[in-house]
Image 1 (cartoon, rainbow, N blue to C red):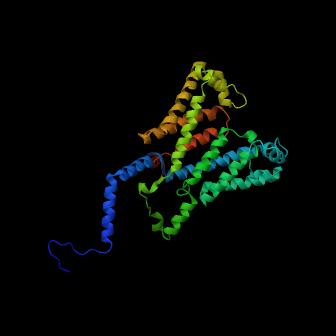
Image 2: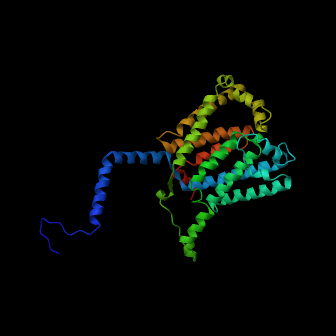
Image 3: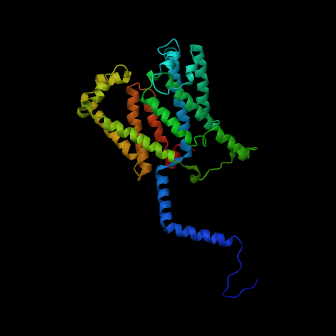
Length: 345
């Protein structure tokens, strides 16, 4: 339809709506709402971002830790989880060691019954590891591990508490999106492979598709930072001030390993004093670097190495259950794509 030079051409019905949307977006980008959105994006990128591939690796290692912890308990099941042991289930129910104690394993009394229950539990953990119906078996794994801990609070320690916390928080993360049977079945459903060429064809997802944002990541960063912060400030006794704490720690025969005995017998005290002070420095450093908003790629790699050194030394010299392993396992979650490119396809 012809129109004069000073007129606009006719518009489609949706054109004005698109123009208004563009104008509103441009206005928001320079106004208070735009600044707020920029601040939210800055916060999310630094404290809420996870890589789906690292979440998949984390799921496998967390499930492996749960399996090993179960096998460790299975060896002493008669002593701690049956009515022939130190805490029969009826006594635990009528005179509980804590408030609101609930455990599935109160239903099992004899060793054969406990063996069946533990076998089923192992099946749950292995299915979670493989990533089949991941969210469902993650829930079941949480129920099983908390029930194991609640069955006999006499053998619970800080490590079991941290396992409960990490298993609970990560329930809200998509741990089954990579390296899982769920991911494989979904891929086969959307991209059927019928020929050799289909099998050889590889579809690399863009790096942006591997990102996942959740406030759970921020909550976990705060949780672990608080753990190290309070561990550091509570080490205020004489042994930590004069550097003798590690020396006396290695003389606790109840928990020391054979390597700890070798170290306490042959390593000079000045070296142990240095490691004592280094423990305080590492814990204080970890409490800070997890929350710093700059140089995060490098600092979080450094945090992982420091955690491996700190908790590796603790695990090698003492028997504290899953504490050292679960504390180190967390540091995989904040890692980003650069390390994935080095170690994962």
